[in-house]
Amino acid sequence: ATFAGIALAVPLGLVGVLRRLHGAVGLAPPTEAMAEEEDASACALFRHLPSLAPLLAWRSLGALRETPVHELTLRSPLSGAEVQFCVKREDLISDLYGGNKVRTLQHQLATCESRAASATTEM
Image (tube, rainbow, N blue to C red; front, side):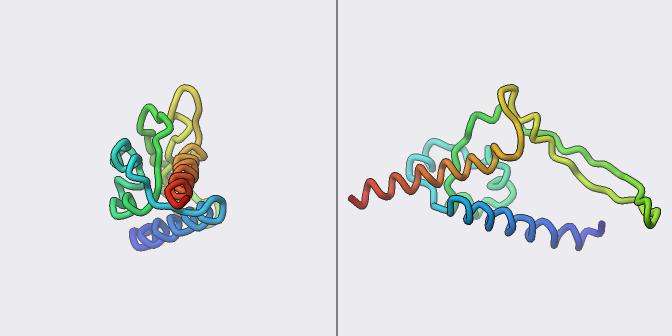
């Protein structure tokens, strides 16, 4: 994979994730409480794209550690070319639970909280 291919794939992948998140629950801005209580640098998405922090609701679900990224190289059986890729070990996020679904749930639950807070203030 070339750098240009990776540089294009990352934003396109992010757009796909955000579209799926929006389709499932939608998006909402963080509440004042979230902004005060949560450390945006604890969210991998916000560490890499800090401009999203004031736009997307997020709550930590007690992830105990950052998860490692393993770099792998395989030889393609078709072309013989080496293919390099990375695997993020989200299964190691916590001793109690794991998996990439936790990352999505952090945004989905926060979106529900944000909408509930906004509905309460509108009444």
